[in-house]
Length: 204
Image (cartoon, rainbow, N blue to C red; front, side):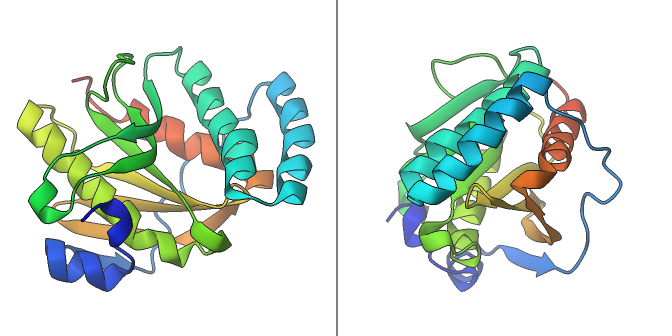
C-alpha cells in the first residue's frame, strides 16, 4: 500500500484515524505577496502553454514546479525542494511511496529534512480525488518530523491542477480543508500563504 492508494477521505479516516473537517477560510487574513516581475512574465507564457497541452506532466513542469521554485527564491533558498522523491515512513500503515512535491524547513537537498508542505497533483483535474493522498502524506510528514525531533506544529497540504490550488492543514490528527480555492491568476495569494507558513515555523 502507498500514498496513492488513499483514494478518498474515508480511506484516511478509517485507516489512519484522522478527523477531517472543512468549512472555514484558513488563510483569509494572510497578506498576498507579489512574485518577481520577471517570474510574472514567465508565468504568462507558461500557463497558457500548460493548459493547452493539458497533461499532468505539462502542468507539473510548467506551472507547479516553477511556482514552488519562486517560493524558494523568496525564502533565500533556505528551504528544501523535492520532486518525485520517495518518502517511506511507515509501510504497514501505507505511509510509503513517492510524493509529487515536498518542501522542507531546511536547505538540505540530499533528503527531505523536516518536511513542511506536501503537494499532490490532482488526477484527471479532480481536486477532491487528491484529498486522501494529500492527507496521508501530511500524516507521514508529521510522523517523520516527530521521530526526528523536529518541533513543527502543523503540516500544510496542497492539491493542485496547476491552475487551481486547494490548501489543507494537518494538526493534532485533524485535517482541515480550506473553504477557499485559489487560481493561478491569484499567484500572489498562493505565494503569501506558502511564505507565511514557513515564516511561522521554528527552524529544526
